Length: 150
Ligand code: ZN
Image (cartoon, rainbow, N blue to C red):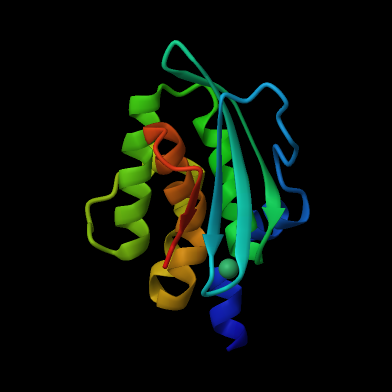
């Protein structure tokens, strides 16, 4: 059990959980979506400011387990400055990485997100890691104001 946890909760995850990046309400956001993972109880609100197809700002609020918090914190850092299309590509890559559907992940492209690849060994935790990304997907498609992983 402790070995498993050591593998899963790597230093980056600890760091982002202790000091989440972009943890704030964004007053001038033009996209706002709530995400909920009932399996674990993770809740977050994602704020985006998209101008001319570019994500100029990203932030979040909410409460969840270490993995969901680290995942959304990492995500908001990584998507800032990306185009909507680039963010969608990252979503697809991240989803394939965490669900193990693709062995051919380009770790360079996915960068720091690779620390979350370990969750694929823990099916119950995959939704914690992907919640932020499903919320992002909904925000980019601009279709829903809240999503649930169930
Ligand atoms: Zn969780």
